[in-house]
Image (cartoon, rainbow over all chains, first blue to last red; front, side, top):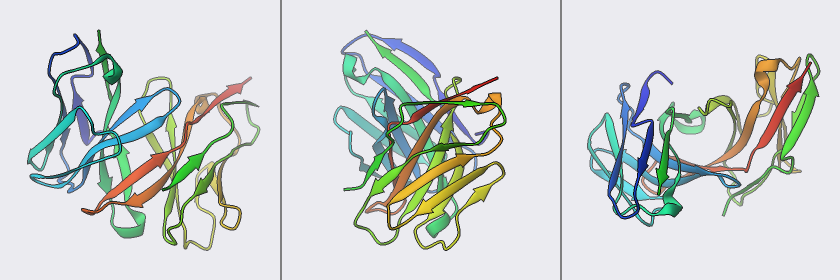
Length: 114
Length: 117
């Protein structure tokens, strides 16, 4: 989606190092999400944000933290990367309201932890 | 807890034919939303179609339609007149409202569709 960018798009890192992934949106959406995608699991929610400095945990939040100091940026940090965090990470925003609210995804970040 | 089941790991269809991708769901919420996303080999997640639990009619978006059978808890995606570009992984997802507002999507494991000449 043209309104959502993720950086970096690919990253290789070593076990034990901290890693920060960035999601940037240009459309002033309130809600932002981080998911991870692994084979056999579809996408699973890591953390989400419902406004600046307002964040909460998803179903697979262990080992991850997030921050949102500006509406447009939502950062995901792996505090000490492990091989189990090798995955594809997707950021998403919500468009619409109520019953028609729909999530749109960024292009994804492929992370390899050696 | 919500659950999405996609029982077809892979499907083949010939070009110009219609294909149905199965999705069943489980939830105790009376209000919910069901979504289908397409993931081509390039990796991006593309929103295709949405069905609300209170919608009386099945959703349609171009060649995509959603066969919603509430009593059977199924939300199958129908792609008409398949094209080579439809070859991709397809995910069914259900929306759950989060405590702070916003929605969480629970995804199925996906169906890999290949369109053949």
